[in-house]
Figure (cartoon, rainbow, N blue to C red):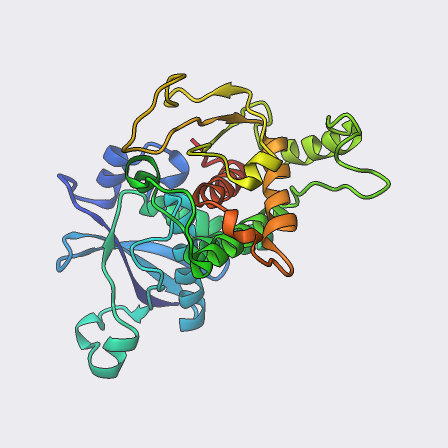
Length: 329
């Protein structure tokens, strides 16, 4: 096998070796820096000290450049899932044969640069990429998630601390909201966790409650995917209600701990009325946003989609992906 630089590395901090790093900084046994945790049939990872970056670089051992490149595409997508947003660069790293970093120049340096990126979450990136390599539905899911965040996403710190608006007056941005939601919902379908209903078997009965047959079927598939159905998901409900929210509000089981107190008003910040929502209702709501608002000939109805609709959709599918593979915390 050939060795390729990945550009991803773990900065050294009072650690003398790969084993030392694993022992001090990685608690999860399936993320320890040992080959058995980071290998597939046609590739595996080694760790070599890179003096230029002062860190342990993840070195790809693969039969071909194409395999190494596919790994780095999946790592890019895995990073978006782990971090919950599009990463600092939405362009994949390019593999270069080991020992050739200093030789990259000119046209190749411009279009296929050797990037250096360090983050304590990098073992998670590669572990999720390994799992995706063995499961086509998971591989498709992480690619779709990354694509959704690339279409539109906001970092969680901006959502919680900076954003004082909900929707925009710009079709260009609102359409991105719509297609970020469409792509996020497609992850639910890829995982086989969509609501399976029909005209003869509607998801809701006339009284508005779930059809037990449809709900039980979804519950069974969630449980078989390692999803903790009893654990509700946090949901952003902020600012004045849009026409979409007024027409179809989502039911919360309880108020979030960080929500504003009843009657609290602040002229400088958007109101926070976040709560917790059952997974069934969360999937149903994103399905509604995808089918009834974001898809087909949209007219002007997408103008009432909000940045929080996008964030909720991406948060939901991120949980489904990570919980399925045992990485949700």
